[in-house]
Amino acid sequence: MINHRILIKVLFCFTLTAVNFIGNAVAGTRPIVTVKGEEIFPVHVQDRLVRLLHELGEPAWSKKETEKMMNPVFSYLRAFTGRQFDRTLAALQRGDKYRPMIRKKLKQYQLPLALEALPMAESAFRYDALSNQGAYGLWQFMPVSARRYDLHVSSRLDERADPALATNAALKYLKDINKKFGRISILLSIASYNAGEGRIQGIVRKSGINRKARGYSRIVRFLPEQTRGYVPEFLAAALILKDPSFFGFPVTQSHVYRYIQIPKAYSLDKLVKLTHISSNTLYELNPELGKHKRTPTNNFILRLPNKSAIQLNKRLPTSIAWQPVTNPIDLKYQLKAKTQLVYTVRTGNYLGGIADLFNIPIQDLRKWNQIKGNNIKAGQRIVIYTKTPLMRKFYLIKSGDNLGLVAQTLGVPIDHLMFINGMNSPRQLKIGNRLFYYEQQV
Image (tube, rainbow, N blue to C red; front, side, top):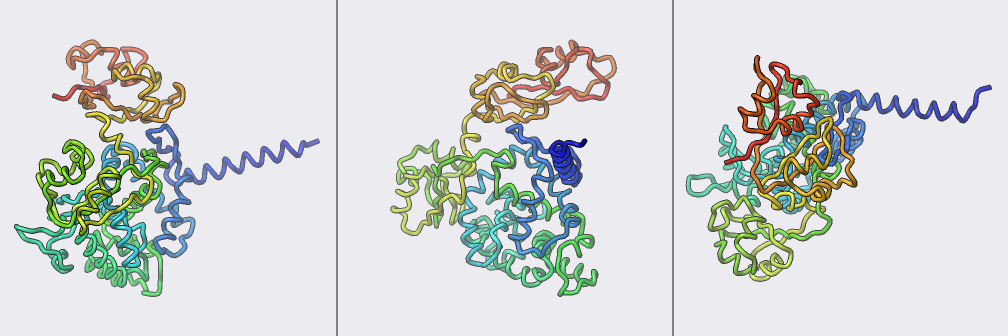
């Protein structure tokens, strides 16, 4: 006689397995492995994508349409959390300064808050970003478009670098193009921001899409290849901004910083005196200041300790104080040491060995990566801070090479090469393979 309890358990397990299989099949079964060692499958992201599309004002997508979009979105998420982790983390840290201002203006213009991710996709939140085509600033305005929206562009003054004025211009532009394309899909408005409204208008006419028809999937196949990639890049950036800790990015638990918008170009020496902080602290909290002696643009936003920001805001009556939107990205990850590495754990690696390899205390490794005990697994990415500037390099194995000869050529111990590459035997060399190692930067 069949035991019904066992049968129910078996059916339940089978159902869970089937759901996971179907969800993971969206973008392959290989998960994203965050720097915390947590695995993220497409099935974990798909509901978040659906909620994001709803927030943007998209009509309901079919399951097939959502799964089709999940492929490129998941690919961008894999890149942002993997090989581009450092760059994405730096962009998030910069974005902390601008997002409170951008979100307030989005509310004023009655646009979806998720559009705050556009400058992350456009410029990685760099006020001085310059493209090969001549687009400049946080929102990557071309000179013609900038002047159309009342931004002054000349050799003496370029207001595209002004975060506040450029944001006003960008949101006016988004409002205008959304009137044209928003009835079909706001994602088409985002595509227009990348490709230009004239080009998108031509595509809409050629596609034969009725203005009453809604949905991005109805027109995506007509878009240029670069723009078809831009929209999922924006969606991936928006997903990370909504919940950076889910994707392995560190966030602080308290608002220890505040942001002050300085109306005019101001002497940094004077700001140091007004805030009672050292110039080193000012530059550490605002690395984009570089070698500037004054705030580089009007309406420049400074990151300051909470008390210093409140003090400065009282002494500069025309300044604007902004608080973090959410728990901000942890600056300690950027400032704690001269070099930040993301190390991928290999088969056979253990936590103490990694600590020895980089000459750092094992307890620091645990703290930086929120690891309890010594449990790590192959494929896990571990954030490492070292005081010695290091660069990850590789050597291409050639005919006649052996591990001892390669180690001698590179000036790297054999144990180092074997550990980094997860080798059990010095004979595990194949012609054409890459052998990774770390070298001190001069």
